[in-house]
Image (cartoon, helix red, strand yellow):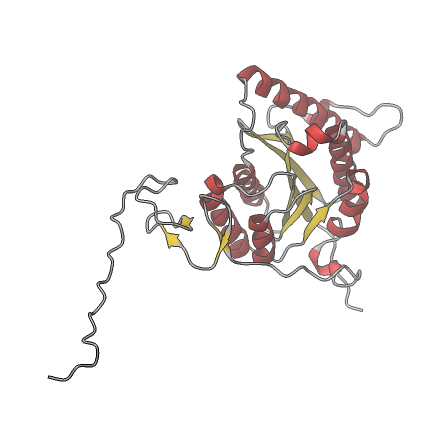
Length: 292
């Protein structure tokens, strides 16, 4: 069996913490269980190898924020307690502190109910963070980055272009994008996962989230083919219209921003470009087969 190098693995997780998600309203205490599973999952990744790195970003209705590492805090000042491994204590302490600050700031800003989570912005920040880390490496150092999205929010028509930019950038840089959806599906993120060579998984039971994270997303991409993972689900690449979110085979495409609509709209709702109505081709009159 060919030996796989598991060192220098960099895992960047983008978690959706928007309180307007239906999952949090329907399942009391689900947010705490999700974050506990995410923190344990990150610590498991660090324990695999001493050279592994992690980063955690939160996307919410008012923006995107770093949860770990915290750019404004020196984690070296945090020391272990009760015999806990120092690095794991730093991760848990910083994440919980930053998460509390992020949620408090959202409440003070008065985020409107039903506001979309800026998940595409979190993915863009993740790519930027990876690029910054790689620029600070010495010529002898290297990292193998990959992305993981954890969300229970469906597709967003307003962020379609941003998603596409992230997907094709990650594909060009060879960064796999893994997606873990909680209780719902996202056709857009499923396409992004397939484009970049990642894994897409829908988790129905939140209480078993940690088991799915460790089983499906903890192993690096070279190891996944050896673990007998379930076969990938066939991806439907039909586009969803921006007006009704319905899959269409034929539709109208905005020539400026490439937004898709199932019916003609004189004004694009995405970029507000104005278009003339399509011309109707006149039908030729038949002479009824009469000869002159």
